[in-house]
Each structure stands twice: as structure tokens, then as C-alpha cells.
Image (cartoon, rainbow, N blue to C red; front, side, top):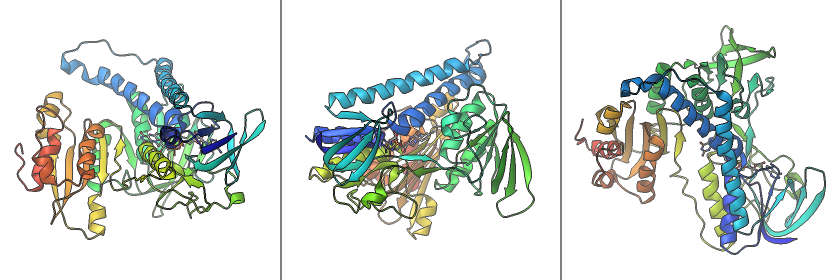
Length: 466
Ligand code: FAD
């Protein structure tokens, strides 16, 4: 079998890249070792977590919020088995969708583990051990990432779970301890808290959501605490004793000091993800990795070996599905001689909790560190008519604009629908807009998006409703 392009891994990076390559006329094949396509994102990441976030949010709304809307219902009962089935249906629908798209675009799909034997040669080992070698002009490595493990803490996916196990729990743990206050820990912590768990988050740093705007993170922590989350910041877990029915964690102050113990029914280890290159044969072909084990690429996603490219979680940059997708499109365009490009300054990041947190561009901390003078415009949802009437007033929109040119450099939102609202900012930034451009764009009333316009007005201290 001979191809123009073989993509190894059919996560959001790989399958999108393969489709774009096929659109551009390349004879394309994909190799995937999972039974289903869609990678981490569709199988054990974005999609199942959002299904459970949606369902648990509905449960909490029905339990706590329907009454004051004038909707009388008896206390809702949780049927976790059914909720998990709802999640799985969503996952299956999405993974089958990818299978359909690959077929529609006449992409050959091989199921098995891919190994690069040499530039232009990929060996596929099927589950039954049978092997075949495929020939190709180009290879794209899109093998994604895996859970980061903590030394000495064994993940059994029952009591001590990774995100994968936390999406599959068969009963609601009474006490859930989450190690790591990043996006995945806070999203999955939210799911189980809404369904009844007491959630304690232990984080090594003295803040949550490392990398996100500090003011947003502080506000978010306050809101989560109000919802019932407990935080132990500046604390490190030094041991987890798994009894099979629960676990005892030993926790010490990160700066040193007396250890304490915390009892948990389930422990979620959510301390990040690492690039996945196992079994790919990169050593043998001489593909270089960086000091964090990521495949090293140039600005055109090319590795140091001619004809071998890499995209997505397995290379540097934010580990996000949409970043991987955009790189998939770009690499296919570059291979076919077009000007594929990803603008890393405008990659939105969203935490899908309630309220949501969303961010694009530079944070205040980053601008200060870079010595860039900026003006900040902030508008709270308490002053937005739609948020007020819906009683979803926690949060604000913050726009950071260059002090001399007024160009928008970063936008940070905490509040209802933040994950949708952020795209107005992303489009504005992609077009090099100023805060004045956003402020002068007519926004429909009454919408949450008016808070974005008001924050833009606030950059020059002329917000109307504040
Ligand atoms: P992956 O999706 O990891 O896909 C890689 C594929 O390659 C896998 O299917 C794997 O089986 C396959 N593979 C690996 N090695 C081989 C081999 N040798 N041969 C054949 N196949 C191989 N991101 C967001 O943007 N939004 C979210 O809401 C979000 N939520 C998340 C929630 C959770 C719980 C987790 C864990 C992650 C979440 N992410 C989210 C991150 C997102 O899933 C990743 O950024 C994204 O999946 C990366 O895409 P990828 O194509 O690079 O790799």
C-alpha cells in the first residue's frame, strides 16, 4: 500500500489533518490503536467530561434553582447509571461521526499501533499481533498525550483515578480529593461536587489555574469555595495509601512543615499530561525530542527527519483540542505547498465549570513581565441586564489593550457563557482590533455579550451601565 500521507493517531489533530489533506487531493491513511477514532478528546476527554458537566449542572439546577424560577418539582433523584449512559451515547455519536467523515473523505483507516520503521515506512501491528507495512511520502505524528503520574502513587482507576477513571465512577464518592487545581481537576471536581461529593483540592502552587489571569483565578476560587469546594493550596501530596475501599493522603506544606493526613473515598490525580511517543520507534529513525519529551518541530511542524511532521499534544504548546485541530489543517496545507499557519497568540482556553472561565491572549502578569504598558477595562456581570434577570451575576469581563495603540492584547472572562463569549474577543484579536473597535460594534440587547462591549468601553473609563 502506498500513500501521500499517513497520520498516526486520530485525535482532533490527526483526524482533522487527514481530512484537510484528503480535501487537498492527497491519498491519505490514518493509523489508530484505539478501537474508536477521536483520540483522548472524544473518548476520554473533552466530550465525556462536557456530557457529565452538562448533566450534573442540570441536576444541580433542578435541585437548587428551579424553585425560585417558580418551577415546583419534587427533589430530583440521581440515576448515575443512566447519566453515564447519556455520556456514553454522546461519545459514541461523536466517534462514529469521525468514522463517517474519514470514509466520506476516502481516507483508509488502519486499526493498530503505528511504528515508524524509516522515513516513508509505517508498520501497523493489529490487536491480534498481525503486522503490515505501509509506504508513504509523508508521515504526521499525532499521537497526543497521556496522564502524568506522580512518583509512588499508583493509579488503579477505582480508588486512585486519573481523569479517565473519574469519568467512569459507578457511585458518587462521599469524599473526593483532587490532586491538582488545573482545568481538568476543577471540571471533574465540579461534576462530582454537584452530584453530592465533598471535594477537597490539593495544589502545590499557592493559586488555582496556573497560567490563567491571576485576578480571574482568585475570583474563581472564591466562587468555587462558595459552591462548597475546599482548597489546600501551597501543599504537596507526599503519599497515598490505598486500602481498596478508600485512601489516606499525606499532605505537607510545599514550603516544608508538619504533614497532615486526609481521608478520601476516591482520589483524582490531575496534575497534567505528558506527550505520548511510546512504541513509535522515534529513537530508531532519529526523530529528536525536546527536554520535556515532546517531538521537536520547526515553525512548519517538520521534525529533524525529512518527511516526518508532528502536531497536537505531542509537540510544544497548549494541550488543547482546537490547537491540535488547527495544527492538523496547517500541516496538511504545508505538505501540499500552501501557507498553513496557526496564530499562537490567539488560542482561547476555557474551563467548562459554572460559571465558565475563558481567556485569550496575554494575562496581566504576562504583560507586566514583558514590560508592555496596557489599559484594563473591566465590567461585572452584576451590571449586565441579561445576567441580572437570569440571576447569573458572578464574574466579569476584562479587556487588556495596548496603552499606546489600543490594540486588544488579552481578554479574560469569568461568568455565564464565557466559553462562547470569548470568541468575539478571539475574532477581534485575529483581525488586530482595538478596544475602540469592540466598543463601537453594536451589540444586541439584552445579551451577555453586552458585557464584552461595556468592558471595551471601560478601557477608556466610559462604560455606560457602571
Ligand atoms: P489525542 O486526542 O491524545 O489523540 C492521539 C491518538 O493517537 C489517540 O487516539 C491514541 O490512541 C493514538 N495513538 C497514540 N500512539 C499511537 C500509535 N503508536 N499508533 C496508533 N495510534 C496511536 N481540550 C480542549 O480543547 N477542550 C476540552 O474541553 C478538553 N477537555 C479535556 C478533558 C479531559 C478529561 C482531558 C484528559 C483532556 C481534555 N482536553 C480538552 C485536552 C484534549 O483532549 C487534547 O488536547 C486533545 O485530545 C489533543 O489532541 P491530539 O490529536 O493531539 O491527541
